[in-house]
Length: 417
Image (cartoon, rainbow, N blue to C red; front, side, top):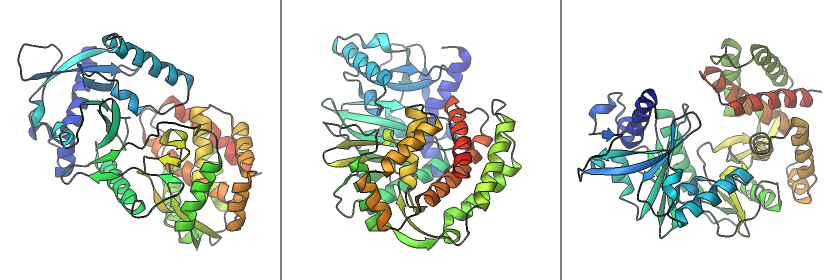
């Protein structure tokens, strides 16, 4: 690891181990809050604990965990049907089984005074014998996720906020799960959430089933889960009475006034997206009647499992009760189609139409007298305005953002025909 990367990694590790206390205190003087001593070269001092790490392609730390961990706990943070992910998981398990796991590690570091750090004090409240830390994805919603295992079984996940925005999302997730878990569900399996009393962190139970079914293709399980959720939460309203409609106005104003900070974003494409968003917004009748309900809002194949019990769904940070019906349906197809399957827009639309022809979906649409094309437009308007606002402000966007922008442009052109 180069010197500059070490400096960035030290800041990241400090944030993960100490920042929860800083966020809770609302201060920016993080380094004065708790002792943090890290070295990249081990010594013989007993007070040091050795950790191994695995790097991202850009050289930043992706995972870290105690070097002597006997179990690949970090695999608990994988949920992908992609063949590369399956191959990595298989190879990693074999390496641990043969005692060759160190060949997979990118390097080691050592921490002193570990027991005094907020992260490890919080971990001590959960019975475990191994853990691994995913450092998180850069951005305003950044959070780290710790997988904890006991007797070679992943039992809990700990989410740690890095910033005030992500801390707010974790509070929202804990609240939503608290509400949902007050009743029983026939087609949903939900994690139990426990919020830290003094730190912006939550502890969640692992809901991964032992026997899984394919969750990446829309099925009867998905339809029944939506039907059950809508039965509990669906309410009639008007588009212009929803808070999300007000947010769209604010998002559009920001998008129209903001130039992309990342030079890799095509300004001509951004201009086309702006024009399409304005046209899509004008095409909607402000007081159009609709139904809204609680939506997960990140209802994607990688945030769920499927079994004979129904859908096991986690990551409820973005959940809200004022999104139009079928938001989760469309999000599942667009996000999964672009980011997981790399489908072109016309293939995504064919998958949407195929799912809409299912008897269970036809029944759901008929029950609410829904104009599905109207709800399709509402979804595109909200999701594109929400995320484009974020992407314009980011100094460097991920390659996947370019895939999404291309898909959204074509999708809006199609629904406006």
